[in-house]
Image (cartoon, rainbow, N blue to C red; front, side, top):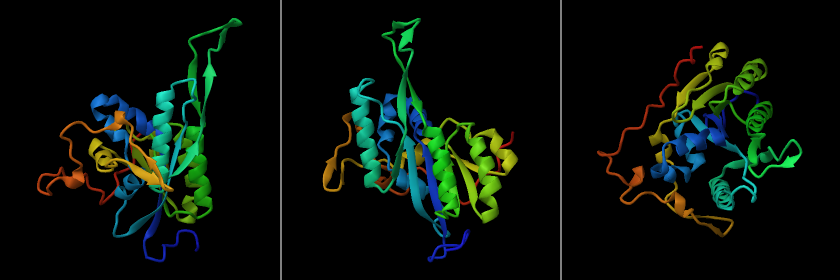
Length: 250
């Protein structure tokens, strides 16, 4: 298939690239009452970004880093279960890693070790650019508020836009897309809490015959109903995806 050519179904091929920490921390800042939003189907999130009449989802890439057992065993277990849940939904996981800092101060061991995540942002950029060169998609959605991704937008404009590719920025809740996108004409959409709530996985699921249990910390609050289960006349109206926003000014 030639670059920029539509799929056999006559629809544009789309892919979503997610900086995991740019999605996780906005949810965390909402408070513990919204922890259930962390158990979301990221493939469904990608599908909800599309114009269904003219586009189809080909790939979702989730770039993240799992904490080491030395950091927090409970957090590591939840993160690994989440990653397995995404694999069960068809999402590709690209792992980074953590490195310890402040291990020693003036040659003396320091008990207060700071762990720093590495590689996530560069993994997002590389996966998006290489997939574009490999003609995986016609439209790439980049979920990140990291200003470092302006460099990705620049490389995309120089190498992939001439091939007929389109880049769309996706801002996580409570964040904005990088202002630097404007100089490259990159349009953006902004996620709201309801966009993630629509994608919450109802409970447990299976991967290769193995049960993946939802962490109890991610259980919805009592009385919560999935948007899909609400009467249509009571369900909140989702934001329009009929047209992407104007380029961010900056």
